[in-house]
Every structure is written in C-alpha cells, then in structure tokens.
Amino acid sequence: MDMNWIAIGDLSDIPLRGARCVKTPQGKIAVFRTAENEVFAIEDHCPHKGGPLSQGIVHGKAVTCPLHNWVISLETGKALGADEGEVRTIPVLNEDGRLFVALESLMMAAE
Image (cartoon, rainbow, N blue to C red; front, side, top):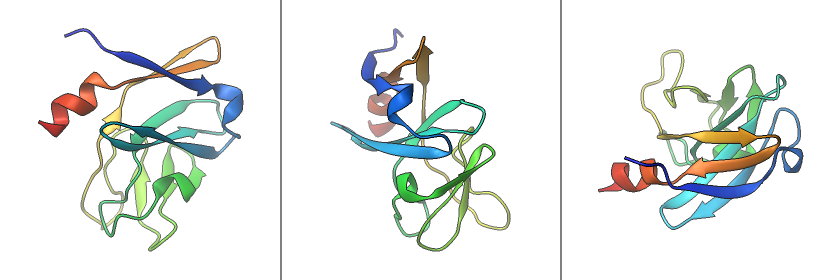
C-alpha cells in the first residue's frame, strides 16, 4: 500500500532533544528530534495514564513521560524497563530537512 506522506514542517522547527505535537484527523502525534538529529513520531499519549509524551524529556532514542516517568522507546513505541504497554509508531521521512509523516499507517491501525 502506498504511504500517504503529509508535510509537517522542517527539522529546524524541533529543537535538539525536543519534540512538537502535530494534530491529525487520527489524533495527536508527537514528533521527536534526538541529539543525533534522528526523527521519530509516535502517538502523543503515554500507554500508562495518557500523559503528553511530546512534553517529555528525550534521551537517546527514548522519551520519559512527564507524568509518571515511564520511558517509551521512540523506535518501537514500547515501554522500557518493568513497565508494559506501547504506543503506535508513525513512519517519518526527512527530505533535506523537510519532515513528512505517513498517515496511512495510522488509519490502518485505527480500523
């Protein structure tokens, strides 16, 4: 199935080790930029109590939820350590600093 790539802005819009929240018809997506300039996108709610992951602290390829300190892998969407749960990951495309997310995967997962 072809991906439906949606432009969401530029890499420079997101600070290093920071995130921004993007609203889509399927819900909020948190788009993260690591210290190594890698970009990841996951659903913007912690599987624990729904905390806003886009407001969490980015370290390595993970984010710590601001509510109860759950650590979520940006690569897999899974909770790390003893915690269990996961959020959906969304494919991200970085074309010379312009960022796109694939919303097709969100729609398929929501059905």
